[in-house]
Length: 182
Image (cartoon, rainbow, N blue to C red):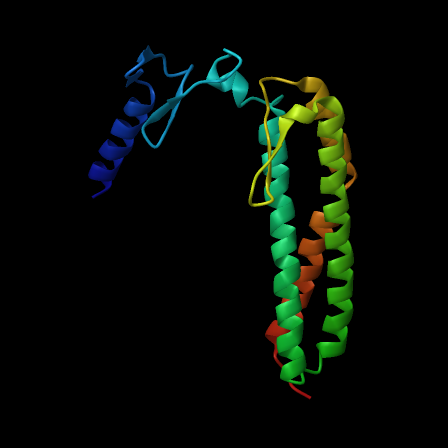
């Protein structure tokens, strides 16, 4: 079984290095990427590795948004844990309620940080932010933008909210797992 898995992995690696063929011609593997059978190329004519590189503001903000979304989810889950503990009359419910307040405060700082990041992007180029009908904003990269990336990273580095939400959520979970009742 190990030999078969090894061979399949080897075939998969070989496939990653072949040129991509489409109705628009053949694209070298470093200048195009596929998504559900469609060939995508960077809008600015750079190769795909540059578009996904360290100076890509769109990719950076997407990664930050995922961390922020996770912190928001943790805050919602924390509320449910506290409500459950209060229903069960857990001996930790008062402590858990206090932790929930701290988690919600930290989540609020995360939201404020996201608003600051959107303001930085908008100040640089308002056309980079595209609101959608669902209320989610898409932030385009338009290629390498080291200056914008540096500004975003400066704002993000000041935020301690995501780490604080995670830390407090772990404490809350430990109390919930204790499960003792009054």
